[in-house]
Image (cartoon, one colour):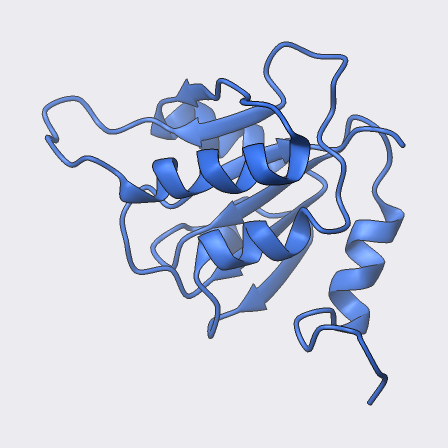
Length: 141
């Protein structure tokens, strides 16, 4: 054990974040997401919800400021009246870390899956709430 390092920062997760470059995308997804099917690199944290993982990641991860859509949410399917509470949590977490509100792009499921296949890595959380999926694009310091 090391002092002052979160238990969530495992060597594997640190390596993923460290190896990512400017413009690479990271997906944080809920437990229902087909991560094994869509991920180039998959990291599993079944004991953590997606909002907590986003909050943890943003302690280390700068969000891109050079693109119009550095944050992406999975859009609610047509005909589904579910209101994802994770979105409000994500908005607050991002604003707290970035000092600004970032309007998220919302992609339908198929487009979200396609973009996930191009992402650098996917973090599969234990999030049980639906539509708890987010893509963030890495910026620079």
